[in-house]
Length: 272
Image 1 (cartoon, one colour):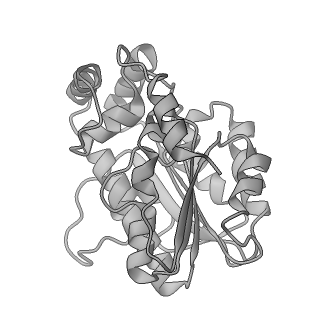
Image 2 (cartoon, rainbow, N blue to C red; image 1 turned 45 degrees about the vertical axis):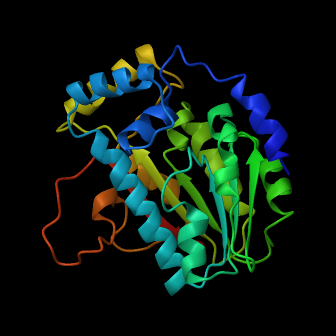
């Protein structure tokens, strides 16, 4: 396990404040304070290209809360492997899960020094449960599974959470392969929670915003079509309503009129 106190101090030395970074811009759009002027400027420029883009961050975060709550309440999941954690904010995975089931165990994984520097905020836990943080890359599947097994019982169902992280794996073969290898290592009853930025003909401003980001920011993003996002769930039983705009996945207001789609699609699938 990562020695968070020592590692976070070292991580702060590696943080660049002269270049916008996606985790900090996401934090800015969510109303957080862990960002710099360079991130705010880039975030505002992206929002000028695509005014609704700040809604992605909110929709994705709310999707996380609804999905984790459903898995804990309705599916009895007590173990969560959250890869590509991002900066801590309100209602992190362990907070949502442990409100339902205090004994829940959560392992967070990220390889970003910005996230590592703030990781202590992810390690608060109920006495009955446990949280841990791994400073590892999504692509290092064997290491992720080996280290996660120190906290999670991988013979029991696990919820694998991949929110807005597979977008950083450019090659399709590698992206699908990583997700498949992670799910193959988990037992029946496990679930995949995944979200991804999409590209679609009726959302050209999204493409423009991503192109701007890839020219000026780091790390680079890869968009995929809704059908390509749905392909990450091949072999799993997709929960209703399938792979949809994140704000349309089991919204809390039930029958109320839904807001327009955001170009962040997500879904939840069960391994049978």
